[in-house]
Length: 71
Image 1 (cartoon, rainbow, N blue to C red):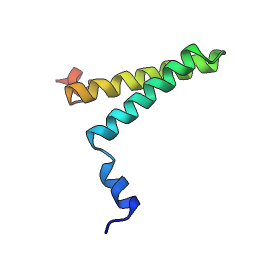
Image 2 (image 1 turned 30 degrees about the horizontal axis):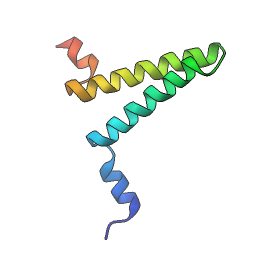
Image 3 (image 1 turned 180 degrees about the horizontal axis):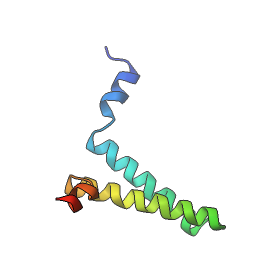
C-alpha cells in the first residue's frame, strides 16, 4: 500500500494539481491587489496574478507562453 507521500508525489504534475496551483496563485494575487495596502503588496499582487494567468494559459493551451512565442 503506497504511503501518503507517494500518493502526493504521483498527484503532483497532474492537471488537477496544476489547476489548484493556478487558482491559488490567482487568489493570492487578487488578495494582495485588492485587500492589502502598500507598495510591496501591489508588487506581490501583480507577480502572483501574472503567474496565475500564465498557469491558466498553460492549462488551456497545453504549452507555456515562451514555447508559443518561440514557435
